[in-house]
Image (cartoon, rainbow, N blue to C red; front, side, top):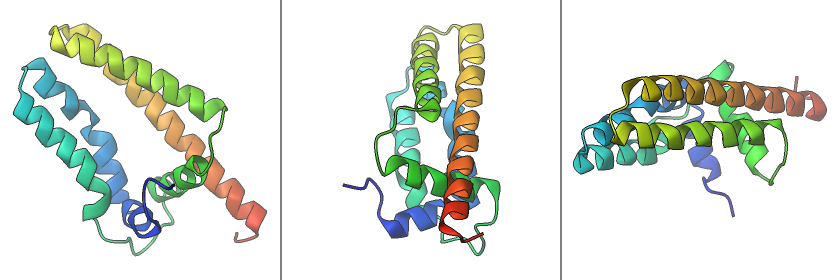
Length: 141
């Protein structure tokens, strides 16, 4: 069962949707740092509604749109591959950052957020690769 509908994937392929999600990632840790439940709920709501609020883009010929379409292809079936490893590493640093944020460990938060961001961007780059490889395979390029 797909997590997002075809229409939602198209709207989420708007580069504004992808970039605002990626760049909003550190916002999760601010309310944790301050132990602010309402702030955390607001950030979680933002991440939940983000794929739905942007219109379908006029053009998907950009890196972020390709990464989102690649992710759609990639998530159609479970894969045990390099992008999955990148997701696991991203998750490990995400959990470390949650812990460090809660206990106000600034440098641990800083370095863990940076590592998580690097693994996320590397994962998105691999999704572009999946998308472009699929286009070549399907003969749409």
